[in-house]
Image (tube, rainbow, N blue to C red; front, top):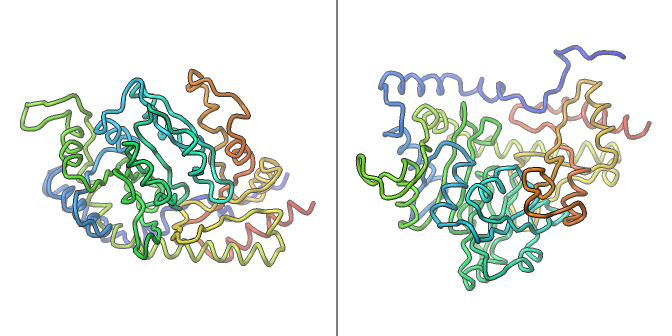
Length: 384
């Protein structure tokens, strides 16, 4: 078998390309933190939080930095006092943490199947799942595209159901609602983000963020992220050790200045993929991602649907063309959640997508010739 030279390999992600553009800015910010020797919370973190508040155009409430996107979800549910006997409606097609935090609190994740076009949770299915035990609706803005929450906000409000948005993959995404732009994370009661290095706004390690327009919730989140401490050594409740490091905040603050440009580049890359797929007459055999009307998709991932996915993926890997699968096992079929009693066939759209979804490289600095090579490689493999 012919082996591809490493220099010719197209990676699924290359963070070094964007970093080279901002290297001096990042090093200056990191040096500032080391010179101050202030590593935990402090002015660097608050400055970053304020800049995000400005970016999101928040008129009330605040941003609360924390240690990870998982912790952001966990803290949000803790602040809303979710616990045993409560139900949280969410999608079975997401990263593990979406359901993991529900299980961690002793609550039950009630899954609603996805919309096969957008891959996001179907609001029609969500409405069917509401019971007297429903405390939270936890939609996931998957791969950088928002769920149209205006379609369910009134119903949730009437039933006393909080909306906690998993916007880990969607910082910068937005939706037109009633003639206004609403950012992902600000449509519900609480929004949760991740700064894992692979995200559109990624740090140099773990990090996360929670946003809320409620001053009361914000105050509780600020307390919960430091062991429930209200003042030095006085603990009102049992919280977490989930603080955003100053080093992470400093790096993220630099990157935030470039986020809109990088997100715009991702949209160009998505358009270019479509052009190459059309040129190769692959639209149809390959189902391309759809941007729902009113949405501003930021393409955290560019995920297509294709039959015989694993066979295609293996062929591309032989040619030095990296792809990835998100997510091969839907949450309701994960072994650790078997106690919720689900089985194969319960959520057919999610299960089908888990067999067909294929993520292609998309990141700032990806070259047109690399995209073309990948699409041509897919065409060659599919026509064999």
